[in-house]
Amino acid sequence: MRRRVATQMVFRPVVALLTLALLLVPPSEADWDPYVSHPGYIPDFHNFTTPQMTPGESGQFTLEVTNRYAEPLENVIVSMDIYMRADIEGSEVIDAVAADARPRITEGCWMRLSNNEVECDTPTGQRATFSPGTLAAGEAVRFSTEIQSTEERSWLRCTLLGSRCDAGTAEGTYFVRFMLEFDHNGTARSMLSRGHWSMAEWETATTDVPDGAPGNINLTALGVDGVIPDSSFGVKEPIPKWPLYVMIGLTVMFAGLAVVFYLEEEGTYPGLNKWLQQQRGKLNQLRLRLKHRERRP
Image (tube, one colour):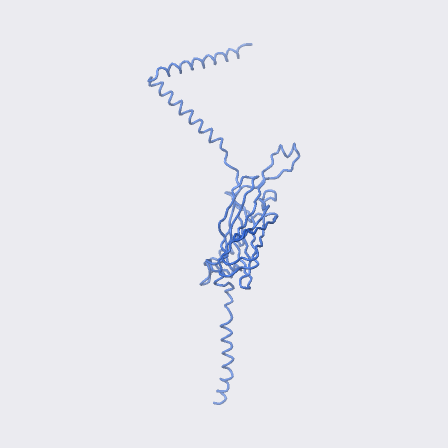
């Protein structure tokens, strides 16, 4: 009996320590923080301005990011890159588009809206990275980029003038993805937009969802602390307007002729009938003169 009591006294502290350790260790499947990853608190990407350009033009792509946490964000880095093109025939990743047919980001700036602090850089290719540093609680930063497209050079200009023949920016819708990195309360966090995952990865993360997952997305499967939005812009040749003007002109002309012939048949306006007969006579005289010239040796 004494031996059994002694054994129980030895194992009780061990069991208590194991229980305490299990309570302190977080579940392995939840790498995200419920507060940091909550859709209502993650940094807000909003006020997008997306350009619609014709090949050869440039346009401003802008957005704002607001810190919605009650704490400041440190070491903030925002990256954007053009990753896909799509049209009615299909879609392709940007690397599959010819190098001279891709739109380029030629300038990138960020401005702190609280004090108008501005910093600009010259990106290369289809990617731009911004480092605004620290964002206070509720503070917003505006990011702006200049997107440049190219116009296809004509064969005459390339051959006769000897200039470089660019293919021109391919028409279509171009999709832009974002990456956000920051430190929150001393912990490094990262958030990505939809364009960073394949369709299979996204379907897995949105179908195999654990209970309580923020936004009904399995963030652990995606390896991020939150999902931010994608965006897009367009490059398209404008529809020619001259066919429309021709159709309007022909419609007006035939409508006028229909009214004139109707009034002639009714005989309501004798003066109109007389004028039409005179015009027909002149037209017949012109035809006879032309025939006479053709027969002359």
